[in-house]
Image 1 (cartoon, rainbow, N blue to C red):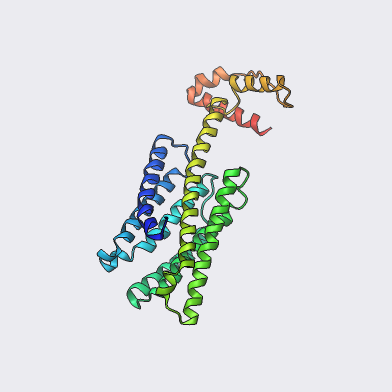
Image 2 (image 1 turned 45 degrees about the horizontal axis):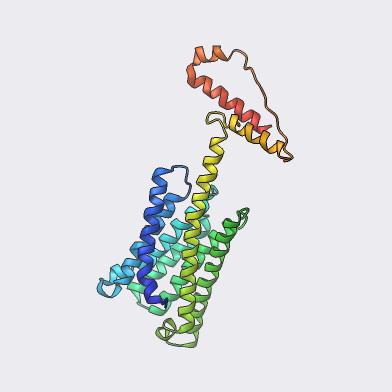
Length: 285
């Protein structure tokens, strides 16, 4: 049976496996947007989980790093999610919130230790990071997998918000936070949030794989210098038209006047620049 205790031990291992996988992809495929950030994020998950598992045997100051490492891991992973679509985290929204949460975390760890308020602050900080990312991701849902990722991000943000709300109610009612942390509703919520996070992580890895397949598919049908369709793209268009697809396009033969003179005067780099400019002009039409 899956319990929170087993998840404590599973998370570091899963984080390390995903970190190594994404790092290998980032090194081998420079076009894999977001893989590098994701690898750093999951590596931080490994360190945070490893410290959390050994929390009782470690110095107090080291144990205090768990929550900041978890937030840093979330930030890098969210950066990876958005990088796939050439977007970034809105730091003027997320930065002040996370910075303030870090100050509160430090104060209630070292200044005036309070476990109850640390639990509240930890979940609230996670909810802020996920909410900002989900908002930035809201219109990037053309593909089914992106819709799944968006739904998981939004659901996790809601769950962390609910955990923070529950902690706040516990504080206001004067209840014992230790009893709440070990309660069945809290454990169900925690396990559900963790599992959704793992599914989102796997969806992220699959999405990067699909991005690479799509990139290589486009590259195989386009000229690397101009970006225009090549012979393979033309053959695919002709075959699709022959099979009844309603496509619109044309094959153009263009003669650039005095192109040899450009090459002779400015070298091949100058000629390549002209060809790129022509390709951009044709694609803009």
